Length: 334
Image 1 (cartoon, rainbow, N blue to C red):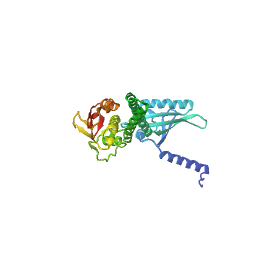
Image 2: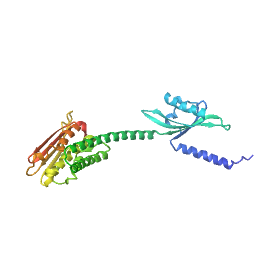
Image 3: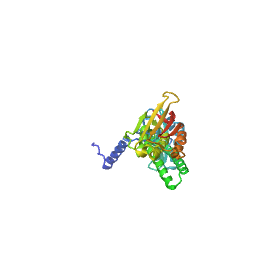
Image 4: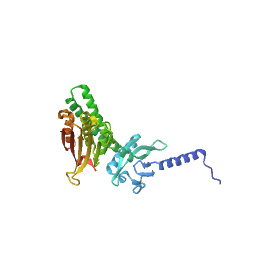
């Protein structure tokens, strides 16, 4: 007797089933089926963490921690009782890490609409969870650094107002100091928040006022990475020195010289530090009163050293200015 060929609907259903299975196997989706007593009957595209322990008749508590199995059990019993789908996230230990899965749970019904089983679709969301954690960490870091930056700006505004007599003078100085912070912040951001290299920090502050290739300006010494908070404050100190030089010193007449250096001291000991020096020489002389009692000296002698847990010296001489800032090891990386 000749066998009967399958009808067209049978062909369509078979093709649809094969396509669905192929799609599942090519994805990170797993489909599992349990009877009404929550014993597993079959699984498709099972994650590798369960391959060695899964078998027909296995229960959730044999595949994962009791706490996760209990959480999953509550959701599945609710599906069986109400017929309403449930969604649950679970974490399963895998080596020294966790694998995260998002489970969509629904009931299976027979032709009489009676509930006979539970169908669970599991999607591996481990990478999504890791990205979420990284994003949360970054957002906390951004929030922390933003608050620090706002505190610095607030301090700058208060101190600038204290040492200026007019609104125009305040705005001029305040804009310059905020712009200085902006230059340093750009370096910190470009380094993925690692900080700013010393020489790059100097150049970023100097470039608005002087050609860094000018032979009257020299930059020498070591070039460590200065951590973000310290970089902002050191950049501000450099800005004050540059502005003073532009107004009264070497940068005001085009005839003086400026030498900046960074040198690592006490290398290999607990007292290791970065000593930053500014040595400015000008022809002739200027009055000490031109530079004293200004916010610049407050930054150089108090605010910056305290902010970096370091010490400083600031001397105004008849023919120049010398400044030294000792930055402890906790504020930079080699």
